[in-house]
Amino acid sequence: MTMQNSVTEADRALKTKHRAMWAQGDYPSLAAEVIPELGAVLVEACGVRSGGRVLDVAAGSGNAAIPAALAGADVVASDLTPELFEAGRAVAEKQGAHLTWQEADAEALPFGDAEFDTVLSCVGVMFAPHHQQAADELVRVCRPGGTIGLLNWTPQGFIGRMFAAMKPYAPPPPPGAQPPPLWGDEDHVRALLGDRVTDVRAERRTVRVDRFETPEAFRDYFKERYGPTISVYKNIAGEPERAAALDAALVDLARDGDLGTGSGGTALEWEYLLLTARRAG
Image (cartoon, rainbow, N blue to C red; front, top):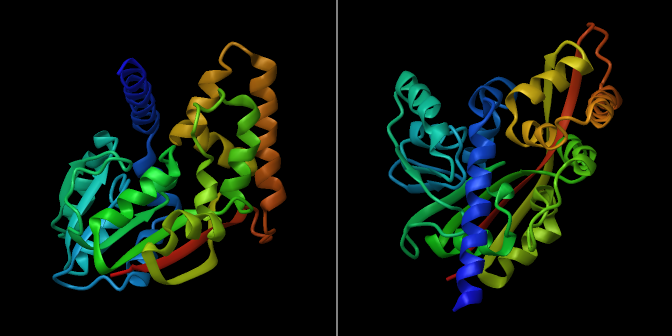
């Protein structure tokens, strides 16, 4: 009993830390300004239609949930960090989308078995620390014959390499936690879902990001808005040499990834894995 209590307390502390990480900065503006189209890409791939019941796991400010609602679905946008919902509600109201917003842990979803026709997540569930637990929940709440759809950054792509660049400056991960970009590895996701799904379709795609004038502008934008980047810099606060080294690493990353458009701006391509599957009966 004592060991179970300590595991529960450790997990609760970890989730509190994750919630605080995503509440800092301004992820809603980043999602809206940098990757606005990705949610709609996932909704289309899942074949979301009017009348279907849809759950968006780790929805953030509704990058996928809002397009699903606009398609006519009955949508629940769930996230561990409800602070993100305010921005999402404002966008939904402006666009005329009607949906439900609910605080929820991706590893312990407060929904019934087989409750949804479509369960999806757009660069969200990948940040749940325990991948198998999160995958089990995705499957559990999806009805037999329903669709599970995931869009996640790949380990080899730009964001995966950004996390690799930040890793030496981050605190050590808690026991049992796995790196988020593994959700962008097809073999990893297939293993997580196992024989509980059929008709798996997976495709690597890229999204073009050309809003940053310079590599330094990219770095500063993420330092200001992106929770994981902010947390890494906080971890090395008071260590100016390490902070300068991380500054340089992020600039080098953007410079290496620059497509060289000739327009004076920095153009990047960020790779993601788009995977859909059907829950087996």
